Length: 338
Image 1 (cartoon, helix red, strand yellow):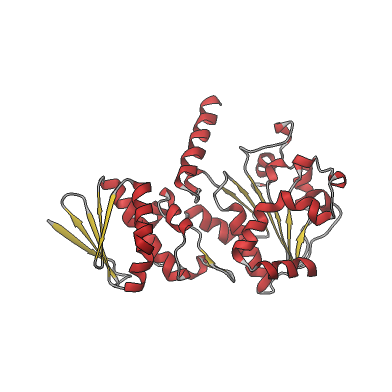
Image 2 (tube, helix red, strand yellow):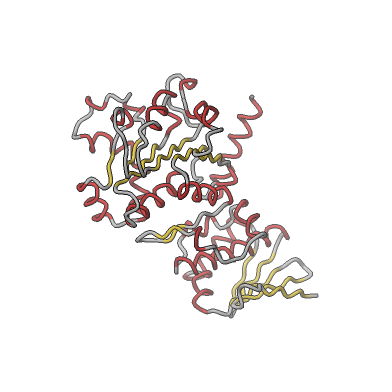
């Protein structure tokens, strides 16, 4: 017995469920089909490797065979990849690895395959799509609130999404500059003892922010904006005494900032500015972990309406699926010990 499910919002695809739990996805748009399948079926092979289901491709049909729940995950992943291609006109390896994210799949059952335009962040090199419910809340907060705090494990998009929104606002001239900062704990904030000028001293500590910028914008253009001051690199210790006007400032790795430092950063806000504080409470590098001001600041500021606080967890990890399992295991171990 076969059950045909035609997606009402997408006439280019049909889904057929067989009695043996296998699923057949027919994609009638050849351009979309080839993008989803990948060169030499590489995308399907990667989905097969990660999910454990067997995936076969013939004609315009993709057949998924194996465990019922795994088959459903692959189906939802393929729908996500179709959505991704419609938005960005390409599918990269990271999309394949993250398309099986559990939270994203759960959300897909309650929404159209087509991503709402307001959720998409368009940058010069790519369109960025928040992939989980929490990420959507975060992007909305980045666009609408003056101060945003996000806490959660690595790989949840805290830095990447903030940089994407900041870059978009700079290019649209909604702000005049982006300021990237983080506490240089490994250097004990004693940057004067390190070789080079200020940019050379702080660059190694801001590499994740640079990686995000380079993924979204051309290298030469980034360098020109740094030289013009439109993108500023500043260690947290050098933010004291400033008032940030017409700026989008991001404090990354804020779990390594003290309560006093976070307060200092937040009180730099000036006219037409946004401040973002990102951190992972499980990765505190301070000699005395109790000195971290991130969690305490969250508790202190939670009742201020103008401040949005987003708490990510392992369900929001959008790197390799194995990262999600690692984060979840450590999180469970921490809970068991508490």
